[in-house]
Length: 378
Image (cartoon, rainbow, N blue to C red):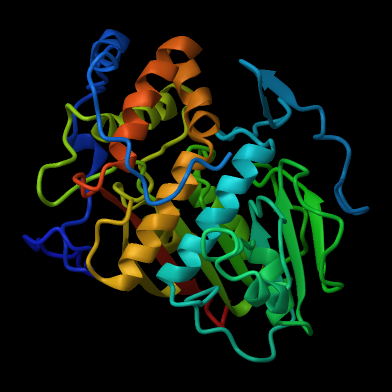
């Protein structure tokens, strides 16, 4: 599929230019902490569409529950080869739930784009994340009680919508709830290690937002290929870490323009790419793993309530809420890796919050979904 072409308007649309390969960008380009300290003395407009938002199941293993504390925030245990950049405490988990809602809006309420058959039996959700969930009926009752919607999570929503399907969600953190649909099971598992599932087990493997945590993406997709039944589907959903704009309101001198550079540089130091989307890693790895009938779609995701289109404006408001909900839990680990102190990060984040709230800044970022099929003859 060809990348979108440029459209001069600032309104989100699938025809705007997708990010360029990371190799074409500067090596680092991160502005020093003193730059943000100086900006902090200036006055800015803090208007926002939202105010600041401030037990595992019996099947979960206890081997990965020794969580680490880094600069006062909780992170997954330091075991095996597992690495993930986000905190796994309540504040960050709430942000992830809102991101799930953003993605659901982007996909017009769909939980997947792969053309799954009605008679599928087993589904795997890799890196399942949180399990905060409200039943569909209760969500409708609480509509707009919490900024217009209630967040959900993919594995629980999928199990809820497909009661005859056995759904397994795996993650390196035990941050899922005990109250779940009876056809859903959670397991603590490191997807970067050899998978222990028998060959030809699953009808569908769903992988989302693992950027910055995978050393070898092709190896990951090969594991999925082995565990899928012939004719089964894989779906990979990854975002860019870089905020952009079509009108120059986001640039290398703005805090939003600098945001992605923390992740690019931190990912290099970790040996785990954060430019999965820009470098075409999803399609390349899926193809190398042996999948066929590969499809992809680019999703332009606005940040803030600036779009004129009502749907895009709703998406932008929730995306803004997700980022502002726990900016520290999103950035602290990467800033720590590249040598910033917590105080230096705090000053930078103050400017970033101002820009994220500003209706005069028309920021967005890209997400890419790639899905493909394991050949029936495999």
